[in-house]
Structure formats: C-alpha cells, structure tokens
Length: 132
Image (cartoon, rainbow, N blue to C red; front, top):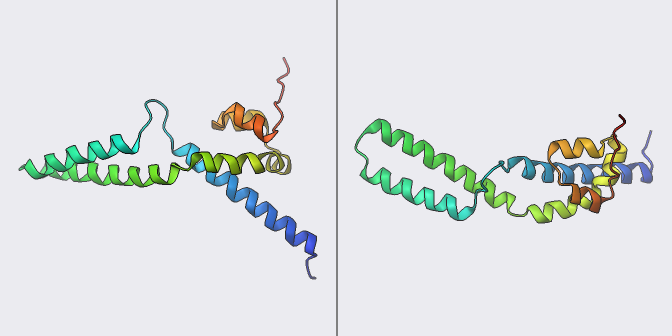
C-alpha cells in the first residue's frame, strides 16, 4: 500500500521537528552549570598545558597533562559546535509547540530539562498549571 503525499509530508515534517529539537537539547545539555566555559579560556588553558608538557620530565605527570590536553581539545570542539546555540534556539522555537503537542511534552517537562521559560513562551508552548 502506497503512502499518500500528505502522509509523506507529515513524516518529513516530524523528522525535521525532531532533528531541530534534538540539536537544541544536545547543545543545551552540553552546557555545564556554573562559570561558563569560553573558547578563549579553553585556549588559554591549552597553552598553559602545552608549556607544562614541554618542561615536564616525570612521565606520569606528562601522561596526565596529555590527557588534560585531549580533554580540552574535545571540549573546544564541542564549544565550536555549541556556539550556534542562538541559531539552534531559533529552530527550536519554530518547532517546539507542534512537537510538544504531537509528543505530549508539557511545559513543565521542558523546564525540568533546562529549556528557558522565555524560549518556551516564544515557541507558544503553554504553561502547565499545577493543581494543589
């Protein structure tokens, strides 16, 4: 049985929504609470580690420094990917309401995940009222 054009369009729309929501949530999830990690601060730390590596004679300390260098380089790569958080947020706003309705995701659940309230308002996701 062949799918109708409308069915195919609905599936494509659902995939687009899911990709947009997932990309934003991944970027949001990658951000750690507390002091923000910037590209500049990571590059400074990387420079300090490189200097220490050149001067370090102890193989165990060098090994630890090398691992720190790898960790910082990976974090730098994720910061570069997450730098477009505003663009991802814009796409999130475009699709969040219909995705929420289709998947039954409440305002409260989005907030518990860490999505800012103002972004949910922009998306038109209605606030859920708690009953006492």
